[in-house]
Image (cartoon, rainbow over all chains, first blue to last red; front, side, top):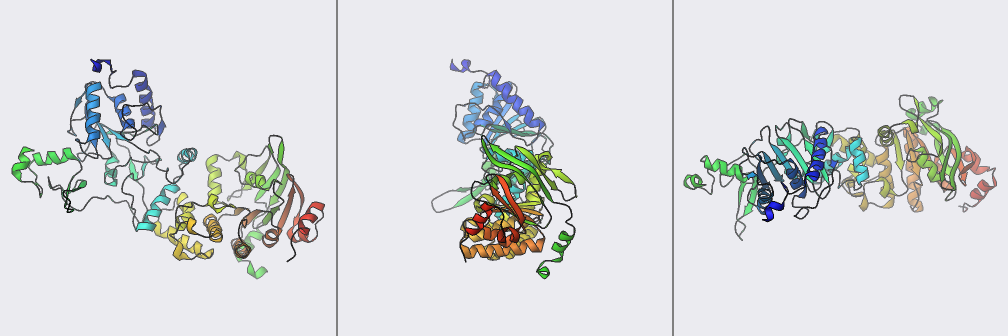
Length: 292
Length: 272
């Protein structure tokens, strides 16, 4: 009974219109943070209220939704948001990256390349890349308006001065379409090159900070760096213990109290797909993977 | 005296027949209070002008207006850009004004915490202006920063320390380095020696004086300390209640003041 009282995808139609307008503006000005009237959602800030509102506004009855949390389809955040939309919108859900039309993500971009027509929705905690260097919002907005981005390099300079290399490993600043510097949400910098010239539309929603920004399909996204300290991707040096992948982003998992650890793909769908194809890692046998 | 001035500075003096900055009838009202009334003067390249007066005489308001950070109620400020064209500051766009403020100008605050990023290293503080104008090579930025630390007598071994670990005198010298790294032609200084003890003041003044001479900088120094004015400036402007009451060559005004108020100021210096 209670399900019937929800509007499609939870939000009321006027709110969705308002958010869609913000999204359209964000797409028109790639990388620019568009303020919007973020609503209270039935979940705490920090759990993806921004991403959920963006997803709710773009979802249609024919869409297939995938939700990932740190690459995984089966963690609390991913499961609860997937259930939320299954219940309030009745849309089909999937864990398969190629089959999904909308993918909401917390901090990863799937390993399987995205294709045209897909939308990737990021949950963003702090949309302002200059925040920790310049606390005043009035000032950071002015700096964006005038494209004064010297400060961003100050941060990278500090990294090199302290650690000998650019130690920023996530939320690595990018320049979108040669204009706005943007925080790609706390994705590992391993994922940064995937944003460049991506066929899918990328939308970013920050609920607490009330900002939406976007990267339209096939847009240039460049990670900031120095000539003598170029941008480098980072991944753990190893192979996935389950599927043997040597090109995917790995999670380090401690397996007992003695400090034993193994590396597995952070993207669970990618890992399962590979095992279904018969790939094996150090912890699996071909028999096991045939079942998976 | 002449041999201490570098040839670059000499060139600026020779080519200085046109003023660098012109203040024309500058006034500022805060409600019923006249903070600044009809201030006019010209500043030439390589010239150091001191603005002296007691607290509340309108010095800081004037400096804010001159450096484009405050809009005057009346009057205007014109500045000769690097291409030789005289421009009214009020007509510059915000982007142009901010670019001017961080390339062709410097601003040394009384409180270094206002002019520095206290949480980032000294090297990044000096390098920030370079990165802001597009420098993109870590090694080059760092070597320029370390050159400048040397020039302002800061141990280059402390290049990676944040200024919050520096002493007051070092912070002030770091602030100067940060401002001069883009070869500005004009530097504004607001009580640069305020809050420093006497021996540190002396060292800082010595440094500023030699840098100004070496680089052929023009400077506008706001101070209530006549000794600072005497050491640094060529010309002096005495302010009282928002008006300029006396102006002239520094030694002339300080040794033979005409106005009763200036006489009072000069006579209130403690004998050495």
